[in-house]
Length: 106
Image 1 (tube, rainbow, N blue to C red):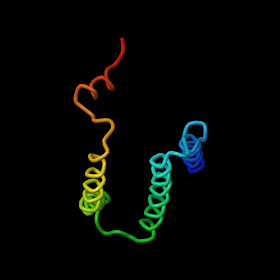
Image 2: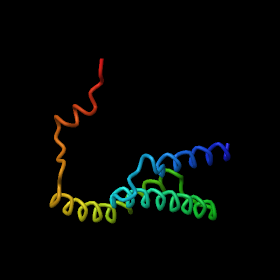
Image 3: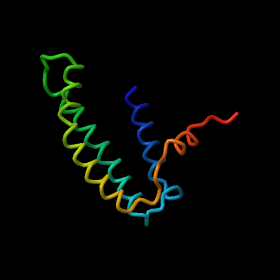
């Protein structure tokens, strides 16, 4: 089971890092892929650290607290990037545009 998970993970990396699909001269694409790699590394690190200790509280309580604690830093980053994106917005999403993207054909 672990080998299958690793194989699927590496297949995803190959897909996301494929030079034929990604323009590596585009800074947002490079930053996005770097964040993808960093997220995978930190997820793996968190999984290893989580198993190092015997926890007294239930899994879902810990999950809730992790999400609750992460709200403020994530909100700060989103607010900062959101303000920067509004200044140089080339594509503005609308409800009608999102409906068009999600509309099923046929």
